[in-house]
Image 1 (tube, helix red, strand yellow):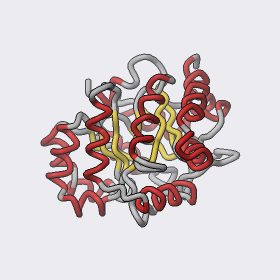
Image 2 (image 1 turned 120 degrees about the vertical axis):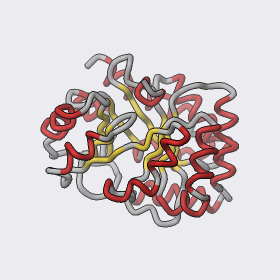
Image 3 (image 1 turned 90 degrees about the horizontal axis):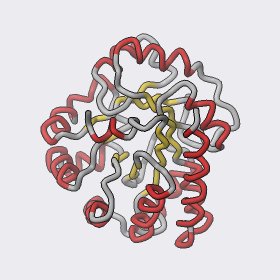
Length: 258
């Protein structure tokens, strides 16, 4: 079992997301460690990009703040090295293909693996083009996470068959962001995945309240939350860590007893 899949071994997983470098990388490190203490099972670290096509306004703004603050891929790697001195929690990088290409796919995956990053999520690489990245992930033992969306329909089983780590089920059409209501038939989506693989499923995009997390955890093995956390970072800046801790704890408690 990969370290990514280990995140699901103690019941329903809670997977929070943080934009690296917002408000700065020192605080990002503190956020990651606080999230782990609050009960997070796997943490997604967003590598900021100037044109994040899958993101709503909240994460777009965080990416802009992080880039303005001088955040680079190498500096993020340095921050992860610091985290790894204190923590073995499963970590995933979430980014876009452009920063990975610019860095060099082989070099990026090698460096990420050396730092103990367990998985890579690249929303703008469709299943049909994943071979541009997958061989390098395989070479260094990183799980390339498959995303399935409500529009995937007939492709769900095909994509899920080759999934590693966990299957990222996108709950809603459109970009990331807090949503009042999630209307996708997630039960159908996750049961199609389970017909072809034992790899765990996690639902993301739009989840922000403990009640929503609880509902989503009935369908999947884990729940992913990004924008709601990034909003807390935007609101409190360098003082955000205790607020993020409280939020993650509340969300983990909500999925813990499903």
